[in-house]
Image (tube, rainbow over all chains, first blue to last red; front, side, top):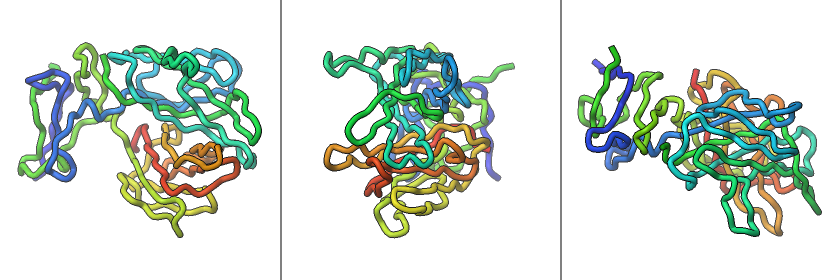
Amino acid sequence: MASILKVDSMQGVTSAGDITITSEGGSATQSLQQGVNKLWVNFDTNTTGTPAARDSFNVASFTDNGTGDATISMTNNMSNGNYTIQSAVTTYHGQTDYRYPTFIKGDISADSWGAVATGSFGTITHAVQNGGSAYTDPSLVMKSVLGDLA
Amino acid sequence: MTSQLNVDTIVDKAGSGGTNIKVANNAVAVAEGGSATTTVVQGLAKAWVNFDGDASGIAIRDSFNVSGNTDNGTGDYTITFSNAMSNGSYSLAGAGEAGGGGSVMALAVNDTGGLTTASARIFTKTGSPADSNVVTSTINGDLA
């Protein structure tokens, strides 16, 4: 008979923040905590005022910094600003000559991660067309974060 | 009473690996830093896929919770899930290969109807939709 493990909280014995699980292939192990997403969000920036989340995990609030420019704040902070951020963004149906890449907000000229902090990060979305680009507010932007929680 | 299980390794009772382990959907784990907790099930990726979008009919290289991909046309793909999501408001992230000639190969989703509980329709674009030899995508959200 299959067993079911029912618990409310899990922590390692050797290190509270490091539980090891056996891999799918059975020959390796990995840290459970390291493999879990620490944030994900599906949100609408094309609204009046502050962007609105349709659904999210570990997102406390948004700040609207202007067209195509938003800051996402976390409920539980990361331990440092060196986490990874994955993204995808909508395309407007029928506008085949456009693409809408979404970026991590920083300062390339200063080689700076200025908008990536332990409790928040900035996001920039462009509408790119052959010959130029401009900031834009699409109706669907998605982000997720992997890294170390505090 | 709140229970707490202190372990270093979790395997199934047969000792053959972790594939039979079930974790309740409200279980939390202590974070790496030790000062916060995170909901394990909320943080788990619910699907991922690596496929060749330039192959005839699309070729999946590896995947999790993906029953198949549909080639809807140039740079236009539908990923179908084995186990459905609970709503269409999940988060999708991914990448295509670098575009040539200074173009931007962006991964995109239709703003209307692109995400459903059973599938996600995605595009790779360098201006107009374009097939990508490597497309990777990860789904985070709530399973049904």
